[in-house]
Length: 262
Image (cartoon, one colour):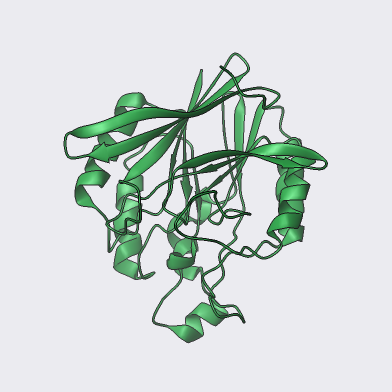
């Protein structure tokens, strides 16, 4: 069995200390083979927030893939957001942004965050399709049975999520992924755990969103996901963190062809 822990939206600077501690304890007890962090490690992109995030993540001794989110740019420095929005992120986590492999799984990172955009909500996602092509080529070159992409923004809005998203070129990105060998796209941003089978004209993939470990809750408790890959089956659980401890519940199970399992 291969186990992947998926966390997102930790928001150091607005983190939930109890949720952070409970998630750390649960993840270390589970001993996953890989940790995937889907962005928004910080709240305002401050150096001390990145330092806190790095110190916490350094405590996990396993392959890690870490991608940035829109909050990982310097919120109060407009010039830096325009010129070098991910300088602080790269200084702390550049070695973990790219690819992580373990067992029969590979995860490749894609940056959908931007420091600034010429639209009303600059924090929305944007997919560079050439970057996505490179990610898909890198994933296809691996002999791993399960191939994943990790980014911050969902390509489409999640059904029922309180935050709607408008990711630029999201539809074309979804088409490209559906036509590839990638089975799963791991995201965050909306603070809502979710698993959905994205059916496109040319194929399909699983869109898996993780919750938050911050105090910036919307309609869900703090949480993270555990993805298990065993004997041709993908199982995705959410781990909700309450006052009396973590609670696991199944969000979805699919076979290697992405058909739902009973």
